Length: 220
Image (cartoon, rainbow, N blue to C red):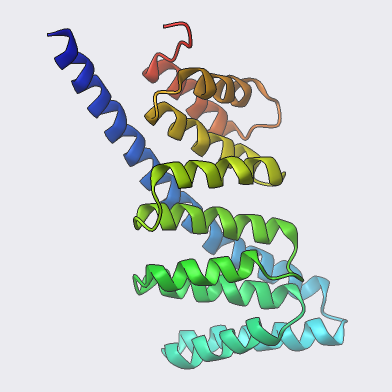
């Protein structure tokens, strides 16, 4: 009877964690779309006087304008050209626009490929590269392009490298440890997230929730 209860509890915990990961990836994708729009507007005004930035900013807006007119293939072609040849942050934003379009079309392999290109673009700012890499890892795992161990290894590696999205990365890593029944590792991360002043409020609240719902105790 005890074995059966343990099995049921494990199944419930695994299902809850998978649902959390799916929800987490949706938040990341929504955040990416908003970030592209807000950052694009800020960059436009900040770099207006710089010829190269002005040129690439104009190309980005022209591509987006084509999308509004329903010319999706033309939009992707323009965005891809800008991403491949551009040297400013507008080129990186073009890559995120392409990613959003491929996600909309449910072309997940294409979206992953684009995110990895952004992550490996040498002239892209590190915060963009880290953000792209995190999304690529999540999408690859959701689409079963890697196993759970490989996913965890990638997230651990990214958590050591990134400083911009470390709270989000740590939160995802904690849920993976919970699913793997590594209570001590999960509790250490969640305790840090719950207590650190730098942790965003929503993440801190979820850390408290996971600690409470999971009844995580490394000594049990």
